[in-house]
Length: 207
Image (cartoon, rainbow, N blue to C red; front, side, top):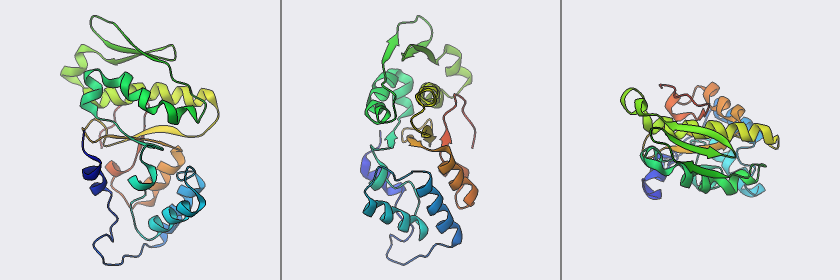
């Protein structure tokens, strides 16, 4: 797992070197959309305004200072693939409870597959062939999160769903966000695809 300091470095605002940088209309439109779709709903009104201003003037939207451990969480693909899914989901549980999902997670003993039970739903995290032909670090991230998204949809309390960023790496991230917020980032044309969160639907997309 990367340290918080190293991870935060990745999201340093573009004007952090001291030179002022102004966003264009695309940044302002995106900032308004992200606010409308609740990216900063967990913040106070003052901090929400600060986050919007930063994004409107050119900063990357998913800033750790505003999101970490509220709607943004580390997801080390290696740890997950090596048996860490239950621990990882337990770390997400307090945030999910705010949206009507009370997690009950258990690792199932299985001779071949790595399997967990998530609120009674059997989730095969990894099969033996995934280590040969697939991307086990990424699969062990998105497959359990796809079940979490089923539970969020069934709860009906929020439009937020689990998304991944840098999936399958040691510095992977999970974000609980409205899919429309992710689409606002994508449609802005401001970011390469690998810097836009992807909805966890059980499949791994190559970016």
